[in-house]
Length: 305
Length: 327
Image (cartoon, rainbow over all chains, first blue to last red; front, side, top):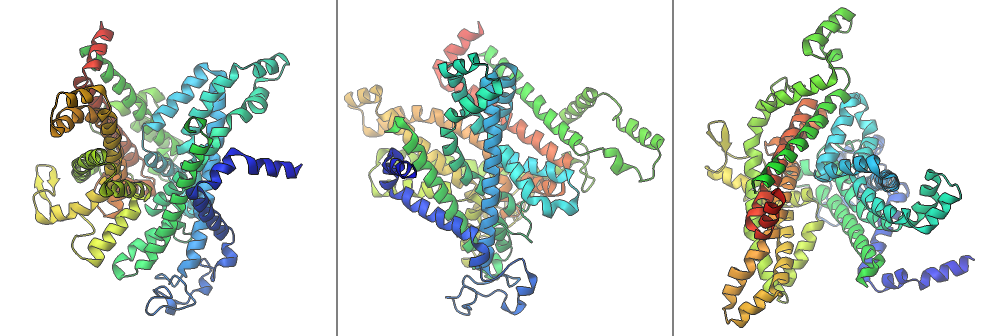
């Protein structure tokens, strides 16, 4: 059974398109390595950047190992607090990806449920959801994310800001990005709703919720994958921007954006590596996700063939 | 035309009321303001007195009505952080943001349109191809990374341009301008380049695809058949129709520029409204956040309405439809 599934997968159009696109192959290779690096951060890192006892102040501000004055123990050099940049980037990448995936999951769950509800029920429910979506869309995403973030900070007492930061970020980014899912799912739900299999289920006495979850949902999930892929790049970027602006991950638990912000403060001290390397990792990550998303959109869209 | 105008304005008023409602709700989210105003061992009577004085004992829609009425008169209350009127804070910061956004918008048009025309007319030249490739990278780079790179190269390594602040400003009434001093102009270069880069690539790509589309239409073929010069065809006939969609996108993106100015202002420590907003977000300063939201939405609504009207003026087809619909 597994054998046939595999051979069918290898024989599919999607796989053929994948083998013929060097951008898809390159970007997925890059992504897989970055995901592995993030997952294995505790193994790959040469130092735990959160553990103060492992930091030696004498080793602060060291350039990368190949530059003059570099130390082979610190591959990409160290920052002002003697944190090994290579290890910080691994842990930062991990946090960026966790926030990215979690907020995409939140946005997709929210958007798909609201889209299903709106498309299936129609009427006032649909109109309300879509008006809210219109208003959200007319504002730039970063502004909405900042507002949600600000409100969450206003509600939480200040001493909890650092611990709750990751949840606040996931919430802010997830609440900003659900609109696209909702619109797409709503559109295809309205089409599926009138098909014969749905009517058959209705006649068989399946409840509205049952029809939505067991019958319509599997048929409208296709485009969600594409949106989720493109969305991951956006989410990682929004997280990095918020952290860079100082309202994201705190300096004690730096994500890539926080690392860039810390590096930015030492720009004039000549510590260029502290800001350049996290930026490069961020740009490569976002670029790879976007290229893969573009490829997936084209490959799954029969109109373009 | 008049009917169209009136309908658009009524629509905008409703949008603004909705935004004011969101801003008003933000205050409700933040718990009871009475708690932070009275001492911890205040009696219930004392609390009720404060509540009454602030008007918090009245129905919520009365409170909302009063909030809208006061916001319409420019009274946004006091900042929780430094107890100054929010309207004063915003007025102080507004010129800096306005100048930055206007310069960036101007740059993106002045550079984006010619580049777009060029890449459309000579799509296979080496320069056009490399411009297309560069614009792809420009879209993928996070804006704050672009800003940091600009500072690193032009301020840290080359030392040509300042990396923070507005330089010297001249006060004209309540408006402080950086246009009139050399240091003010120099300080404006890097932030406006950073802010305009994304918009510029967008306009360039848009002009390119629109121009290529227009050049394929019949009226251009006819103009060629009449033996007009290339120059006249491209710039007098084709360009006019190319620019109509550009105006719409540009209008929509102007709002985006104001939002992205938040990032630019943080990178360059530019004393604008965006920097004020970020401070408000990190301190949970609701009056400033709410007022910024209302003000920015007002600017969005004004821009969108004017773009729609301008569109009706520029495109005669819409004018005819609008006139018919209003009868």
